[in-house]
Image (cartoon, rainbow, N blue to C red):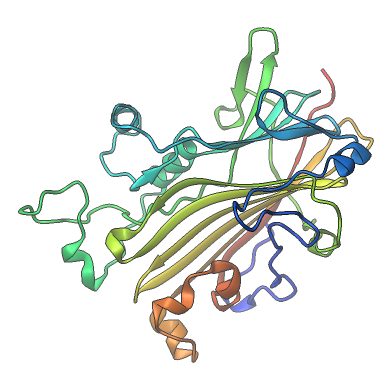
Length: 320
């Protein structure tokens, strides 16, 4: 494991990669990414058909899927599957980001169900907050609210991967079950953030919200995934952001980067970085204690000390 501790401070890795980067066209009215057909053609990319959001490029099919929050029936199904009645206020259960390598059948994807499965398995103790007595979670106004679970919905989730083992039947195997050849290996390589900061045409960009909770108006718990595709590579940022007003801030980032090349065995680098600090600790360092100063994690993330960092790589199998 290539890890750093809190005292390391993340020297040399303190620069945030913008989404989208300079040069990307985003409508100021709709915040929708605007496709440049000339740049797509020059890169050899093509948009997905039938109104789907995404593109095909260098053997990859990249698609973002945005759907409404779960309805009552769907939520009941999730309660049974996850054996829990506690869920974020807004669950975009059918939304996802999918990156599929066509030749190998490998699919890297980000979805809400797997993320909440990670939350359930990690089962962190609840954060104690002064306002906890007035929070309302699946409780009537006359009932006593007992927060005996991780109501912040913090998740260790860093993405999912499946391998298509029978294209004709559409069967897939998941690496978690150990029945496919996909395996993340610890490595010393790091994502080249300097190259990502260079001006390069953005062929596709999107952000997908997986779940969100306002913690009873006492903060925010938010899981999002962003993707940007350039002529030379694709880059993904999965971010869990937690702010419990007056108490705690937590940031768990997973970045993935894959450079396009001539090899039939692409390599994906994955960096996971967890940061966390109490408001009391930040205040002791001279930072503001007002929660309003911590609305944007991309601006204040450097104030949060690193508690875990690791880098892994995944070498995709060759053409079957």
